[in-house]
Image 1 (tube, rainbow, N blue to C red):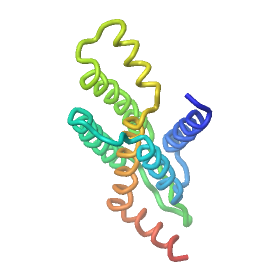
Image 2 (image 1 turned 60 degrees about the vertical axis):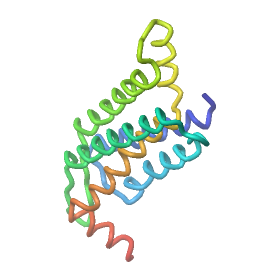
Image 3 (image 1 turned 180 degrees about the horizontal axis):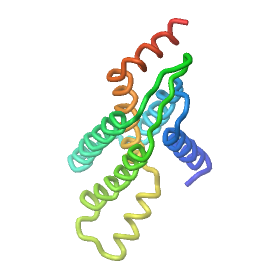
Image 4 (image 1 turned 90 degrees about the horizontal axis):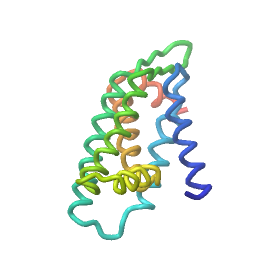
Length: 166
């Protein structure tokens, strides 16, 4: 894994952990993680996708969208003193843990249907590789999370519309 990838992974982990605590919500918070993960997914996409990979792609997208929607529904948002404060808390972290578990499951189902000691070792290597499929999972969770907060929480919608106009 090169230094650029390590730096991007560190940035993603930092952005995820920022949502665990109470913090002021900014437009960058809702846009940075989706933008980074969409770019990394696009850069890593295979030129030609075979059917098993396409089905894995769909499964990962659906699972990520479900987790992102659930996380957004559990996020507490408050507006006071002209500031938007959000708190993701434990449900936000549990969503990312479920995402990691889903990635392990998709690797096991689509790449190593019969696990042996060698294939388990290869599965762990793939998991740590930060491949385009992992970035796709992060993209699907973060995009749906941001869009759901924007559409379903009127305070978030008004706050960001006000920021864009000024």
